Length: 420
Ligand SMILES: *[C@@H]1O[C@H](CO)[C@@H](O)[C@H](O)[C@H]1NC(C)=O
Ligand SMILES: *[C@@H]1O[C@H](CO)[C@@H](O)[C@H](O)[C@H]1NC(C)=O
Ligand SMILES: *[C@@H]1O[C@H](CO)[C@@H](O)[C@H](O)[C@H]1NC(C)=O
Ligand SMILES: *[C@@H]1O[C@H](CO)[C@@H](O)[C@H](O)[C@H]1NC(C)=O
Ligand SMILES: *[C@@H]1O[C@H](CO)[C@@H](O)[C@H](O)[C@H]1NC(C)=O
Ligand SMILES: *[C@@H]1O[C@H](CO)[C@@H](O)[C@H](O)[C@H]1NC(C)=O
Ligand SMILES: CC(=O)N[C@H]1CO[C@H](CO)[C@@H](O)[C@@H]1O
Image (spheres, helix red, strand yellow):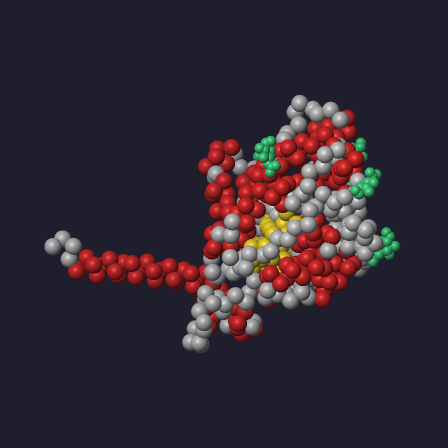
């Protein structure tokens, strides 16, 4: 009789205890907005039903039934048009938008010693990124303080990465300054706004109904599985892809030092020995693996995943923006339409190219890389990335004439329906 009923009771109690603790800590982590009582009152209750501790005593459908508050992730890769696409969320008055907060995680670890980096393997780093995203989606900015360099003082920092790209961080109450010219937010905000009060940022975040975060620092869609499976988050993944040949051309212009060998190759027609093919190969593999994950429709992506080709967005920004908003389940605020009309020049050529005037993509069109890369380089990328290109509907070119003839698009018409 070693395993007596006492043991059973003890086990049950222990298990209940653990569950209680788990529930408590879950509650604690979500109860801070209730402190003072006013925050919960101020907001639409239905938007915050997942914060069930706030609704105690009222009839509530419980934390797993409300999907009103949206948490959007713009999942992209460097130089794939994510700044432009991010504006579609940044311009919405009820969306709190952050431009690449994961920069700080990477920054915190890149300067670590090689020994530390070995311990912090990819999984640990991804874990840190996920935790940070989770905290930010809950409007908790204090977790981020661990990563910002130099360390914030009194919960305020002058080193928030690309603050000016987030309109919420450049408007009252977070910033009382205002633009006195036609300067874009990116410029005046960093000049006029004082150091960023992270407590205020968190409050401003709570005052907006939804949140969107852009990142290029998570390699694969699969790495989002844990976040996607969390029913409290109600995550919506907008997977932005772009033709890798366009990505490469854009990187060559943006990151001069890193792409010096490529520039020499492009200019001289001769491939230097030391040209590094691994980065674009990695990018293509990540693009391909992520798209494959999306196409295979795993249940954890159901209702949460949409693939958007940058070229399609550039060609028909209004139509695509509408589709994206339909997918995330929000109305497209008129401000977004206004922004699109102001920032994509209507003088589109017959093949539908637009100019992005105030973004870093200014004067570029989605396919303009075709006039700016040598055929040799294009062929190399086509060989390295052939699977990715065919998966995403980007046609190979077979001659210089084909490459430069802009009246034949290399973007095949394809429909990528959201996974509903
Ligand atoms: C990285 O480390 C170097 C040498 O230890 C130091 O001089 C530099 O300030 C550090 N950079 C950051 C961003 O912490
Ligand atoms: C940040 O804002 C909070 C809330 O308004 C305020 O209590 C705090 O003093 C501010 N911190 C700094 C450093 O200004
Ligand atoms: C590649 O070379 C062509 C012709 O020399 C030049 O016009 C173009 O700007 C170069 N592209 C890049 C990305 O440097
Ligand atoms: C082509 O490359 C040149 C030189 O790198 C760059 O200045 C220019 O903006 C590029 N043009 C387009 C249309 O991408
Ligand atoms: C890509 O290239 C490899 C090797 O040349 C070939 O086996 C494969 O069929 C190609 N894939 C596509 C989708 O064209
Ligand atoms: C470009 O392609 C179009 C359509 O295939 C063709 O009619 C035209 O002649 C081509 N232009 C040049 C300069 O080759
Ligand atoms: C709507 C808009 O801004 N249209 C401008 C697009 O660019 C051409 C010249 O490139 C201007 O003439 C249009 O006014």
